[in-house]
Structures are given as structure tokens and as C-alpha cells.
Length: 102
Picture 1 (spheres, one colour):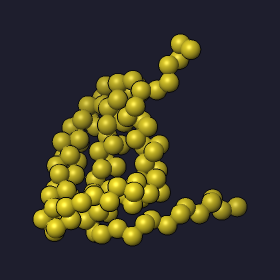
Picture 2 (cartoon, one colour):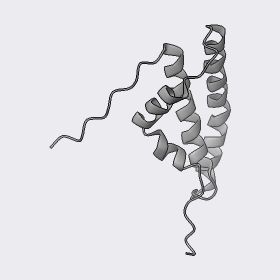
Picture 3 (cartoon, one colour):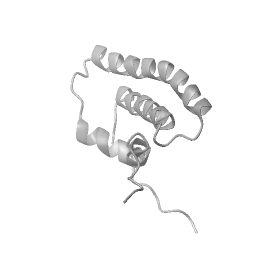
Picture 4 (tube, helix red, strand yellow):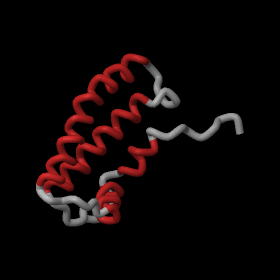
């Protein structure tokens, strides 16, 4: 049995797709660094080291969009792309986990 088919990505410019990819890379690293979810300091350290490079790539993607005249972010379209790429789950790792005392 095949897994359910994902909805198609919305139409994005190449720069928008780059922005989404770089943003999700940063979110994934922040999720690994999150002290409320971490298990070892070494994995957080490695993620923090990589974050410097990925944040620069995210900045470069936004700079390229701006230089190409893409001055507005089409949030609903980009949000759809993030949902298709599992962005809600990935961004959820940045948040605090539910309180286990309740």
C-alpha cells in the first residue's frame, strides 16, 4: 500500500523556493538546539555551529529576492508550501513541549 499522495507545491519563483528551503534548514537546526527538547549538548553544539552558515544562506536568499524586485512576500502561498514540506511539524520542534506536570 502506497502512502497518501502529498498535495502539489504551489507555484513559486526560484527565489521563493530558495527562501523556503533555507528557512526550513534554519528551523530544523533551531529545533535541534532547543534545550527543552535536547538530549545531548554535542548535537546542540553542532547544530548551533551549522546555524551560522544556514542563517547566512537564508539572508542571501532574501537579498536575492529583493535584488530581483520581489519586494513583497506572498505569505499565503509560502505558508501552503511550508505545510506541504512538513513545516508545521518542523517548526513545532522550536516551541516548548507540552508541560508534563499536568
